[in-house]
Image (tube, rainbow, N blue to C red; front, side, top):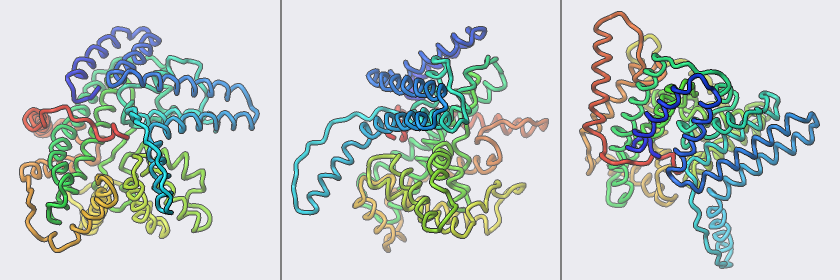
Length: 480
């Protein structure tokens, strides 16, 4: 079920009303969330509900067994079983044909032709997200940072929680699971804040991302016919498409969860105002980057030890992150390229230079900050070419044309109205960069600030009505 669909517009109010009618019964509320989440996911393809249920039962059982023993070897075996089952399922559905094709390609490279037919496998929506979510649960129990739950319904609701089930944020059990144990009381202010964040998410998705997608698909789909300037514009529009699409989903998910009394982690923190790549990765897809940091990078040694190991760890974390996004060499190169961007900062110990908000206490950045933002954004846009391209040949042809003299020509495609919308969108984000999201309400007694807030709300609402793409467009991260 898509957030930007009529189905969801009917589904959400029904679940919301039933949920708060059961406010005196915590168990019944959790059961309702569990059932609603399975309906939400099954709306796409009911056959894959068995996959979520299987993953839930496996990790619930492993967690219980792990808690019942102090034997280190048994606990490690149970953890390895959880890793094997979860990553095995993920590898089969997401990477089977990738490995098969590359296996055949390797034989062909050495002059031996073998014929193996690819298997038609449907990728279950959200499998990368809920797999990592359940994995973090068993890992935290193994590390004795979390007690295994005895409440199967609460755990099932945690795994399948519909607001963030198919595209995150990837929640940690330490944060979300305990919220299923406590009585939720309806809070009007919290619910209104949730609605505002949902509205901002819909604006990002339906106005910015979906309109950018029209031109991005046109330019990337027929890239050989366009000049370097047009191709760069396509890459630029894709940067705003993927940001509006993915951070928009996160805003809708976080806002929806707040309607039901839950707090999800922040997943984006105005990343395009970053002054270097290290800051960008602290602000982009925070739930995934921190997951890899805590469960892969730090256990490997992180930035401690020999320089060769530090370089290995950085490349490994970024390449794995790229591969997580999809079974294509373009994602692996995208990850490796970001590692190349990041590594000099780490080796010079400048990766933690910017941990504050840019231009704190000022309306505008200074020249040094502005230069850092422009360089970081430009590097990010070029890396996005690999993320969006069909294959490596496609990506390289686009980048070569961008680097040619045709970069100075007037773009053949120039959507001025959309560029103005993007400029307004970024201006709103800039002046609200110290808040949780672009439309967050700030308490004030000044009438003109209250008026400007209402004006902004009206602009966002009518923008969705007037400039939406008039179709239900899937979120980009559904394919991951």
